[in-house]
Image (cartoon, rainbow, N blue to C red):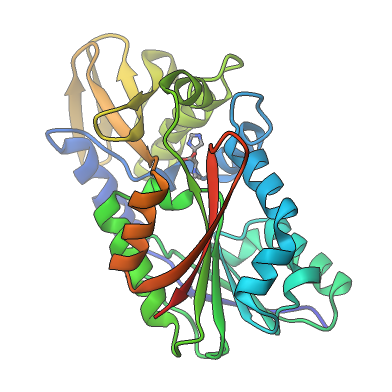
Length: 318
Ligand code: AVI
């Protein structure tokens, strides 16, 4: 039998258009990073993960591989494994033999991203109950009642937590803590660590230009969602580490003075003016543990690589 899938809620197109227009008209124009991920954007992100400069994906995978037994010991067997932003489910699948979850709940913005991967996974692991959930959890996590309440282990890899501001990150982690219905809940999370600016700059402005394409593709997505007339040739990618804020910033910068029009609105940009498209915060171990504690998690165990570039943490709901 194919695994069950539930789509919880999808924003309506009018609400999306309002949100995007408001962002473009703001004094500092900005668009939420989730709009980077249309079908082409998701493929470009997969390509980013293969780039020599983009170290997070492979560093995290190596940390998980090297510490599987210790992670399983910290998290325990028989959990309800809730995989946030699961996509092709590959990262969680590597944990299955060690973690032996009772129920696997991949969550992504749309169940269409999960369907194929789950079919294949259910065949490989027929003994694990699987329930795919389509929900935009970037604002709040709403889980259907079919998700088992016992021993929830939230898996949030890839340093996606860095795409929230620290305040938003605390609120989000707090919502995960609240969704751990009993004190036996936990969190397994990947966190990108503070490091040399050169390494960070190269990771977000790679020599092949894939991150530039990923960022610029947002404008094609806006053209479709908003009926806008962005011309990609008028914009350039900016991606750099802001040391003061401890974050990567991605922007799209106008190459010349221009006006963008969309259904019901327009905005003029001067040459050099930017649209802020993403932040990716980098943490020290101490700063991130403090953030977990503010959100109601404790007993943190952390694993890193030799260069201390990336960290995987297990934390218990307390
Ligand atoms: C998904 N997220 C964790 C990536 C990051 O590193 O912040 C998104 C990304 N943006 C540019 N490159 C990768």
